[in-house]
Image (tube, rainbow, N blue to C red; front, side):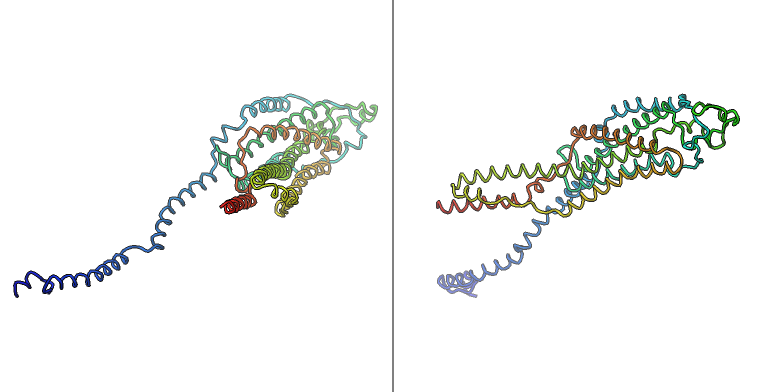
Length: 413
C-alpha cells in the first residue's frame, strides 16, 4: 500500500475524488437514517391512542367514585336534618295520654234496651286485625314514598351539599315522621271520643247477658241498665266503644296522606316545575333574541315578532306516569273504605261509626300533609340537570346566534 492510499482510506486518489464520493454517499446515508428513525418512532394513530387512553383509568376511577358517592346515602346528614324535637313533642303529647286512657279510663255507661235490634247482632272475629289496619297502610306508604322519591332522584342531581339519593332518603323519612304524628294524633282523638261517647257496638247484647232477664223486661225502654255477666272471649269494655271506628280512622289517616303526597309529588309539583322552566326559558330566550336583534338590526326583530311560538312537545311517558299516580291515589283512598266495610259486616261498628272514622282520618291527614309540605322547603332538594333544563333548543339557539355573528363578521370583512 502506498503512502497516498494510507492517507486516503476511502480509495480516493485526490481531493476531487473525495469530494464527489462524499456528495454521492451522504444523501443515501441520510435517507437510511431517516427510515430507521421512522421505524422506531410511533405513528400518529398509535401515539394518539396512548395519550387518549392514558387518562382513561383516572377518568374511569373518577366516574366510579362519583357514581358510588351519588348512589350512597349519608345517614349522618339525614339524621341531623330530621325533626327529632317535633317527634319527641308529639310522642309526649299523644303516647302518654293514650296509655293513661287505655289503662285507667272507663267508657261511658249508656242505657240500653234489650229489645234494641241495632245491638243484638252476633259476635264475629275481625276480618282485618287491628295491627294490620295500622301497619299495612304504613308499609304501603313507605313503598310509595320510596318509589316516588328515588325515581325522581335518578333523573335529577343533588344540590351542592348533598347527593340525590341522600336527599331522597331524607325526604322519605321526613314525611314518615309526619305520618307517624298523624297516626298518633288520630288514635288519641279516636280513643278519647270512644270513651266519651260510649256508643254500644252491634254485638253488645252478645257480650252483655243481663243477670235477671225478668227484671230487665219490666223496666222501661231506654232505662235498662242491668249488670252484665262476663262472657268468655268477649271484652265488655270493648263492647261499649263503637263510635268512631278506629280501624277506619287510622287507615284513612295513612292512606289519605299517601294519596295527597302522590298527587302533589307526581302531578302538581312536576307541572309547576315545568311551567316555571318554560316561563324562565321564554324570558331568557326573549332577552337573548332581543339582544341579537338589536345587534343585527330591525329586520330580525320584525321576523321574530311575526314568528309563531313553538308548540310544546307531547310527553307520552309523563302523561302515563301522571295517570298511574292518579289511579294509585284513588286506590289508596278506596282501601280504608274496604276496611270500614269489613267492620260493618263483622258486626263491630255501625255505618255511622265508619263514616265518622273515615272523615276524622281524612281531616287529620290533610292537616299534617299541609304542615309537611310547608316544612320541606327547608330541606335540601335535588334539582334537574342544567343541560336537561335548557335542552337541545338552547344549544341550537347558541349555534344560531354564533352563525349570525359569523355571518355579520364576514359581511363586515
